[in-house]
Length: 64
Image (tube, rainbow, N blue to C red; front, side, top):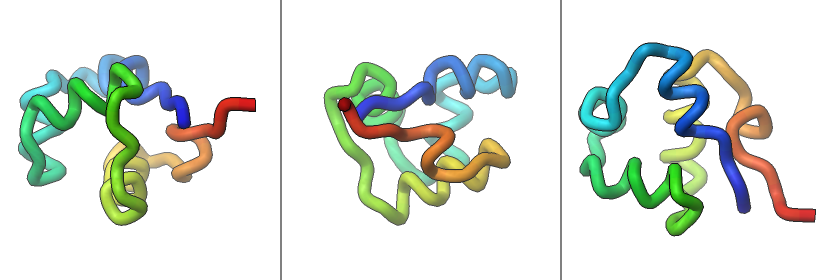
């Protein structure tokens, strides 16, 4: 699964630390998600999308 979390986070003017704190996860988790090294749980993906004001499929997408 791929994502555009890094671009969306930057557009929102958030640092990795800010996003991590808002989601209740570590900065390392945000780094791993942004680098496509970690697929978040459905709950975390939904929380992240909601925080950015988007739908999950606007943030995460499957490799074709």
